[in-house]
Amino acid sequence: MGTMKTILLAAALACLFAFAAPLSSPFTAWHRAADQPVLGPEGDSWEAAGVFNPAAIHKGNEIILLYRAQDRAGVSRIGYAGSRDGLRFTRRKQPVLSPEAPYEKNGGVEDPRVVEIGGTYYLTYTGYNKKDAQLCLASSPDLIHWNRKGVILPAYKGRWNTGWTKSGAILDRKVNGKYWMYFMADAKNAPGQTGVAYSDDLIHWTEPLDHPVLPHRAGKFDSRVVEPGPPPIITNDGILLVYNGADDNLVYRTGWALFDKTKPFRLISRADNALLAPTTAWEKTGQVPNVVFVEGMIASPRLLFYYGAADKYIGMAEAKYAE
Image (cartoon, rainbow, N blue to C red; front, side, top):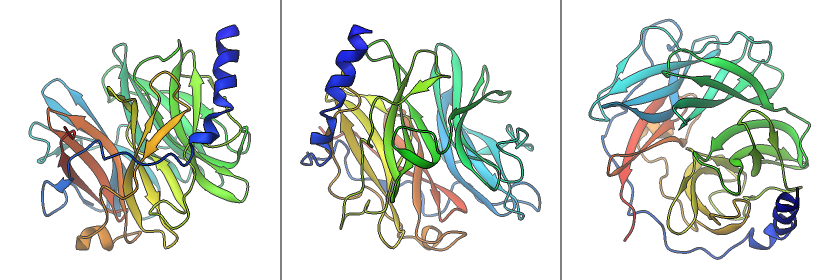
């Protein structure tokens, strides 16, 4: 308990870093790897309306995408596609996760992020039952067969979040003996900001703070929404989180934030300008216009970023770490 008390005392000072001065970008300029989407809607069934917002991970010699697929009734499922070159994907004919639990019924399972820890894959996703959206967890030995762990951060019950919970991005290793996760929730009168939580077992999560760690910024690309992207990674400079920001016109762009590698609640720096913005026709026009939304990142050794475009397609951009 003494160690955690020390952590919480330090966390109380984290708000001092909420508006940390930006450092130079940790990435070189992002470039689209193709002029067209790598995946899009298909058929008249479970992925007819949209294929978007993909998690990404290496499995053997393949890159696997676990993506949100939406049918024409608006119900979401998680699809699976594999690729050896990162651009040409082969899909499984059936989803690997479909809405079954009460907290998923009628709305679906949405917006996955995936991380491998100790040989097990952990999938965070949004369970939506047309009433509430809540952050959920499932585990798998093979990315295909999933065991639900339930809602891990309930809506309306957080220390600062008074609404829905979404978008869990889990660090793949412990810091100070705990697992850490960045997530999005709704503060009173200020929805859609990023907070942090820790866990001993990846199932039971505790919020150490009474405020977000990554708030909105007036006049910036993230003035209205600040939402975690892929699972964060530890670099020499700190914990690097790629995130998705929306401005007052709900145009979604991509940013980055850097947190202290020993104090994951302490913000060191964040992007002053977006890394990726909607510019192509298929990023500007779809189910939701003007959206690029990164949820998957692969290091192979160049960095590949997989993103949803206009809530209808999946695109891929690439970059390198800046030297």
